[in-house]
Length: 329
Length: 258
Image (cartoon, rainbow over all chains, first blue to last red; front, side):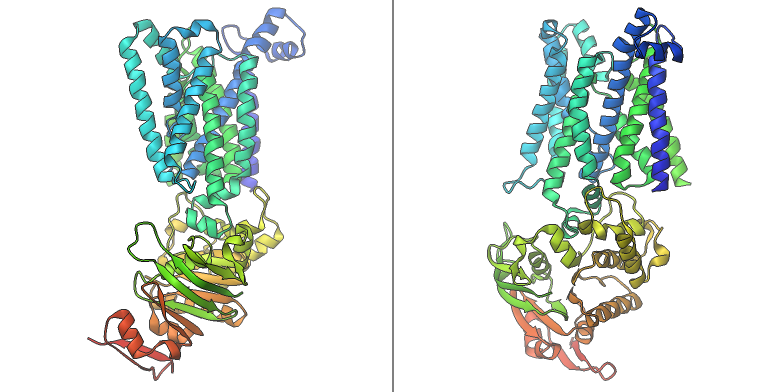
């Protein structure tokens, strides 16, 4: 437990440092003093606009989306008893992307900036609903093997839908769709941050409160039942909350890969498999990682932006392989 | 801790005949009761039904005269510790973490372990003689060590009864004997123990009572000398046997004939 506390302290500092970096660096580099002034409503109004209007909401969106994906990934790994599980494994990203590509291809995005996230969220909810209905037996019990299979198959269907729209659409539409699907925090403003927080934080607290029963799922549902867990209820709530967090993340930031897969594993290597530590620490680690990835994405080919999914994979995969190798020594 | 069934019938979907068919029996408190029977005779189904996991098509399973399905799961887990036949661990955990899972029914969802919990875990580790394994990963244990870890987890629940499904299957002679001796000692200390096993002769030596199941029915029930009768065993197992007294242990001995 002392190891978890130390890790928590380090990660909280890492999140704070990442947010500070994200607010300081960009097309205009700012000093820490400039940032603090802007936050207190003093200093140059242009700097204030950059800090409070652009960079801070973007950094906070990174905190919410990165933390949410890592938390959802850890939950899906426990729920499906599968270390390869990640937030998109049950077709949520497919549903969101298919809906997003549909509104892009039909030219509906001109109606307002809210259309794309709303459509993506709706598509994600549709995928969640379909997968849940297929996997629920007549007695309302949830078979996680069927859940996994249904998720993969539903995802494949949505992939085909996306391919169909690509075949029918103009090259420029395809390009903006592909960029959206690779993920970006560029759509951040305060309204988006508040919306993402409204889904991610309550659902996140519910998941953390399920930590002990999720521990038991790792040794099997029957044993978990004998140890006193209400297994069917735990599975339904965990699936619902992790799905909701993922759907909110995809809606506001597109499909950002690797965070939900590697962060929980990296945290598990440091603090073990107990979910009381694993879930909150995964959130913190995912937050710090995604905010830093976004800083890199904005800076490396400035003034253009690199898709954030490219950065998470390029940085995350070597980092994870090093950790994995170290754990085998 | 009294367990019992009343005209209990369990029919699995797609099963040709019920796994249990109108079974009425009672398992008295403070005894070591062995459940015997050929493969597929309903032993594991009986255990699942007694713990409210298998849903009866007809009849009831009761704990302390109360329908087991009316028990709260956490309350039930504080009363009965279970060692199922097998389980696979999806993520790496240590022996200490595995045994501490037995504290689940005593803890709130995110409540930290208190001194009572740590004491119960330490005591369970000690009673199963695995204190020195506490920091090992469970995936690195031998079969005998792992079984003792799973029994320690059930003990950490601080239950009044233990139910074990073939806990000594695939264990060597020494590990098998040490587990049976532990179960016997705990029974003498007041615990109610339900033991599913294929080891008729060891059951005859260690158990107070026996239940012999045959294709979902109770073929015999009572003390070892009441249950281990040649004609009953030959019919149930469909094999010629000889029953005599073991001169060394002075308990009954069943020898399959060729």
